[in-house]
Length: 128
Image (cartoon, rainbow, N blue to C red):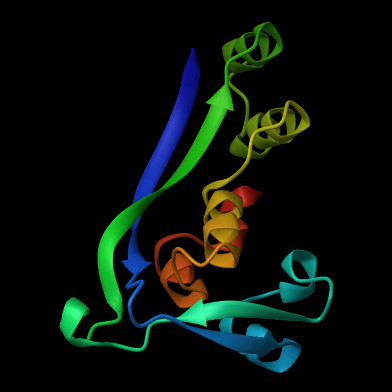
C-alpha cells in the first residue's frame, strides 16, 4: 500500500524549447536555498520560447509530478501514533520516498518542464 500525491506540470514544447544557463544569482531569485539542489553553482535547464505548434505559449501537453510514500510496517506503526507531518516525512525519506519537488526537479533537469513551472506547482518547502 502507498500514500501518494500528484500534480500536473505544463510540458515544454519540444519544437521550440531552448536551453538556458541558470547561474546562482538567477536561481536565488527564483527559489530559497538553490545550492541544495544545484551544488555545482549553475545549471543548464530549458525554457519555453513559443512557436506556432504551441500557440506561442512555449508549452504543449502535461507531465505528472509524483510523490509516493511506501507504507511499510514501520510507517504503519508510526501512523497509529498520530505523528506530525515532519515525523512522517522523516521516516518516508529514510525509506527512500521523494517529494513532489524532488521528482519535478528531475523532470526539469531532463528538459520536460521548466523550473518556473515546477515552482508554480510545488515548492522546496514541501519536502520538510
